[in-house]
Length: 183
Image 1 (tube, rainbow, N blue to C red):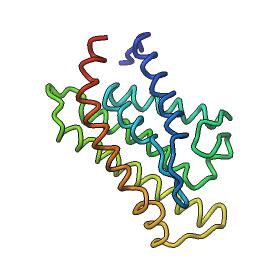
Image 2 (cartoon, rainbow, N blue to C red):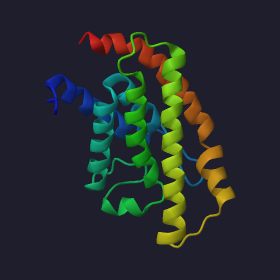
Image 3 (tube, helix red, strand yellow):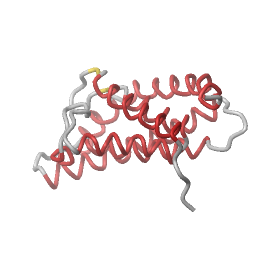
C-alpha cells in the first residue's frame, strides 16, 4: 500500500537534499576521492526521516546532479555516471535507507544504536563506492587501479573522517529527533 507524502515530509526531504548538495562543497582535498560532509547529511536524512524518505531525499539529490545541476563534489551532468566516484553517491542512497530502517520504530534512540546504524550505512557506502570505482576504472574508462591503491585511496585515507562523522551524526540525531517529531 502506497503512503502519500505529506507537505511536512516533502519539506524535510527537500531540506536534506539541499544539505547533501551543500555538504558536497564542504570538502577536504584527498587524492582520488575527496572527503566531504555528504555522508553526515545522508546518514542524518535516514536517521531523522526514516529509510524511505531519507533514501528519497538522497535519490532526488542524485537525479538533480545527473540532470546537470553542479551539486556533486566535482560538478554534475549525466556523464558523471562514468566517474569512478559515482558509486559513493549510489552508496549514499542505499546507506541512508538502511540507516533509517535500522532506527525506525525504536522506542529510544540510544547513542550505541544510532552509531551502529551509522556504521552499517558507512559500510554500505564504502562497499558500493569501492566496487563501482574498481569496475569503472578497470573496465570502462581504461584507467586501471589495483586493489591496494583502491583500498588506500578510497578507504584508508578517507574513512577516519567519515567515522568521526558517524559519531557526530549519532549525537546530532539524538538531539534533533525529538524536535523534528514535534514539528
